[in-house]
Image (cartoon, rainbow, N blue to C red; front, side, top):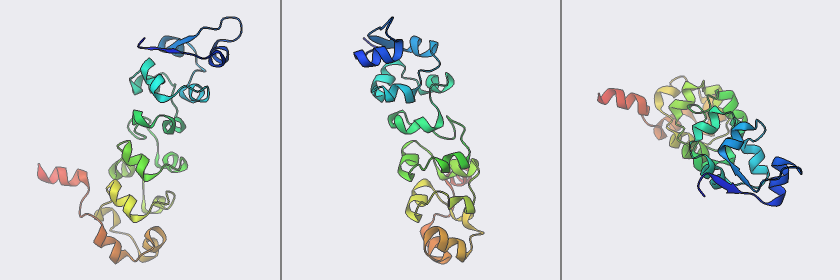
Length: 179
């Protein structure tokens, strides 16, 4: 059945207790129980496909506070965007130790990170190499105040070499210039 997930005996007892163990779970039951979060369901052995079958709209999970920022790595196919969907700041994003590949997979761009507060100094918190930053959309204008010391700290190479590897403008700037 769509919208309903069958539970094992362990999952049923963990969710409902000994007195009223049901063998199914659906979205309405999740919304009615504050403790049934993505993290708890995942810990009980439900996978992201089962959770998605109960409620395919990631925003419903977010708006009902069933997904927290730290949970987004548990459901990568939902492509939860850390800034647009979760409203995360650059410090929160950096503390999660997400890979550049994960950010790219979920649609996060360099411009999104800048809009969340990314600075040259904050880039150090991520530990990404130059290739990762370029794949996210790093652009030259952002690097206009980059010193050689910062460049070597961030990218392990002098600023002049970094500038050769980076696009002239951001995706947002290129779009505005074409209009």
